[in-house]
Amino acid sequence: MIRQFFALLIQNTVSMLGTAIALSALTLMLTLFVVQALGFADGPYLGILTFLILPMFFVLGLLMIPIGILWQRRRAAKAAAAGEAPPLFPVIDLNQDRTRKLVLIFVVLTMVNVTVLAGATYKGMEVMDSNEFCGMACHSVMQPEYTAYQRSPHARVGCVDCHIGPGADWFVRSKLDGAWQMVAVTFDLYPRPIPTPLDNLRPARDTCEQCHWPTNYVGDKLRIDAVFDEDEANTELRTALLLKVGGLRGRASEGIHWHVDPGVEIRYRSDPSRMDIYDVELTKADGTVKLFQPRGMPDEEERGEWRVMDCVDCHNRPTHIYRSPSQELDEALATDRIDASLPYVKREGVRILTEADYPSHEAARKGLAASLEAFYRENYPEVLAEKPEAVAAAGEKLGDIYSWNVFPHMRVTWDTYPDHSGHPPVATREDAPGCFRCHNRRHRTADRETISNDCMLCHSILAEREEDPEILRLLNP
Image 1 (cartoon, helix red, strand yellow):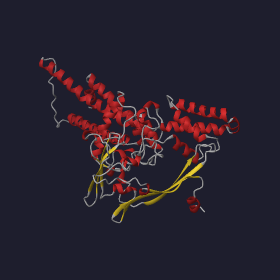
Image 2 (cartoon, one colour):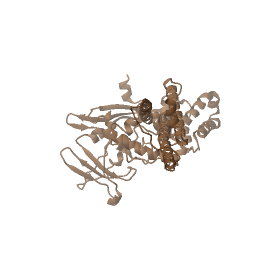
Image 3 (cartoon, one colour):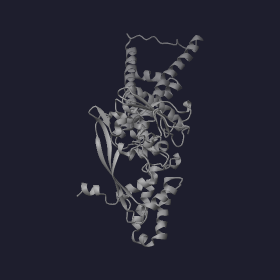
Image 4 (cartoon, one colour):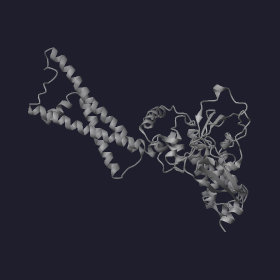
């Protein structure tokens, strides 16, 4: 009986090939699943193969079996019409023991197939939602963003938590968008660099505000930054700020996050990059509306669509953060990853990184290390002789810094992606005004009321680039 059933599956070339494909895919899926479960292998490509590619071959094989049977039946029907073969369709009589066994086998195998497909589909969705899939499946495209993500404050937050968020609606949208991205990557249709800002991001109230509540009161926060001067001694300087983070307190918001008060709505229009802000409309809780506009705006049709301001309009790079050479060297010196006793290492590091133009990270690592060593060999041979390991370590760190922020194959350089959460001179780009996009006193109402650019609205400066700030002595007696 079983022999007759399997004979039915392989009675023609198409069904036989489909059976072979389905069984091979099923065997490989089960084998790779066991391999992963035992911890012998990992990575996005194995998950993609196990739960995305092989299930497609499994379904293809299953579909080929009935197609082959139908094709064979039609051939048999033509032969039967010519008197050369039995009738096309057999009589299915469940009163017969043989027929019942065949139907039972078919039902059992169908249930097994459905179970396998359901498990593979679930695991496939799990793989596609993983950070490794997002960052490594399309490695050449996503390498800049994935590298920045791994060094960010949100490195332990899943990509899908911010880019998709909860709910089926945006999940489906993301997968449809991902289908086109797969085509773009396959046929090399994607732009270099990836343009920003992204227009199809989910509103921050549906993603960021799952963790960061605008109604939460934070108050003032002390921030102390260490920067290093570009003199011979790499003098360490401290800046102390009292950031007025604010939030909702009582019945009114205050501080920086007044912008996202639930009772306040701010809309604006800008150029596509959102660097140049045109109209700014403020609607207060009492219904009062104020429209601020700068002089010399483009025509109406060139000012873009209205956009409701949310978190990412200031925190446009909360995770995929690229830093300037100066910022990276300050951090490396502050954490002793570069020896601050090396003369002019801050100045030369910034110069070498800024002037660097290499075709790959490997070439950059060799070239940067060689350039730094050449500087000390020419100008401070005694330092190179006394501290060769420190110079080599500094050169290696410059290679790391370059590889974290510059990606030649994607045409991503130091100033490709500006950060709007600050303002010059701390911004990554000198032409990125940050807060001053709106707070520049050029935006005025019809009554000539301006958007204030008073620094004290957002922070109080307790010390600015001082070697021994008094405020730190008071805090650390």
